[in-house]
Image (cartoon, rainbow, N blue to C red; front, side, top):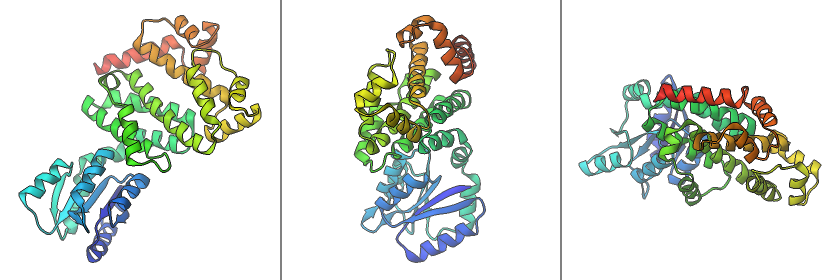
Length: 339
């Protein structure tokens, strides 16, 4: 089912468009925006697959709005609607990432052709891996996010070429940062620049996995500390001391709260225990070392604060379902297939 957003101020056209959508199978109208602000709010909330926008929205440029949507949601397919055209506006629309410049009034037959033949939108709908990860973050389930990221990376490296991989990662990044309540365009742009999709992210599966989890962890942290201010010290302490053995008591003391209260916050917000969170953060770092260094499993385990390599392997198998050595072989096989 394609999710469609209309951006238009023409009352008669909006009614006609709504009726056409209702009579066209395979799509649903998730909202109608009267201006750019409403459009971005609906994009943020529903992540529609297709956007139709009038070339002028009152005094606003529909093309400018579409350009913003394209930058923030690159996988969304955008169409400009207008009762007139010129070579200049068509070129401006194409430069803004618009798929096609359509004439008003839009016929039901043309709408059906767009819905049935839009390959980009089909790819977005079929990509359940990205939706699963997004939903896991939205549900505030850190372990589910951890597992969903593995499946997504496997999909990205087995089914997508580098350019498609980049497009999907940019889209996912934008969607995840919009989960932070009240985030502005300027703040989102800051995070996207901070967490850049580099060539290493696009070409090494483990680094890509760490990149996705880095973004997800940032989103979790931002949302959590908005409600629980004390958690900022806790989460920063974990990151700064990731190479040491970390206890629940240390974290509670750092935040000035009781062990029990800290445990309840983690269970409520992250859906896991404090100990689980620490182990998962260490395992993400372990995967990064596997991808970027020549260290063996023992060296990695000691570097991450595990006193015994055997205990590290036990922890790794608990969360990954296989030993570190088996994990490295599986990852190497996947790389060989995609090389």
